[in-house]
Image (cartoon, rainbow, N blue to C red; front, side, top):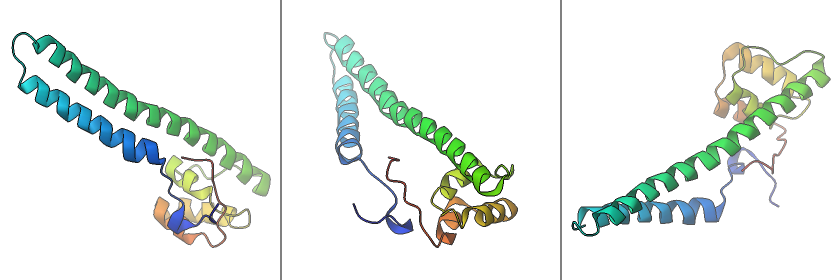
Length: 142
């Protein structure tokens, strides 16, 4: 696997992002076109296709959102524990969840100082990631 860095740490699941999403969009558009051209005899089935398409969009969205939320909670706990092991103190309370998630890429040597700086200066996630000199890869997040 290619060495992870700020420039390439984003991950895509090709089938999910580049096949399922466009196919779902095509299905939804086709269902509404079908509904627009439906006659009285097939209005019910055309409406059901539209409803099914909308339901599939919600399933697509929430399947991803729920998995990411669970990963975010795990990362917050892991980083809180890692910071405590390194410093004997919890992470600064001023840090937002997105900042903590960005800090997971910082090496053990950089984490305490960068966490303090991020809290003090309210750095954004991009700024935090760019400030990391010794990148700690996370190959498990999707």
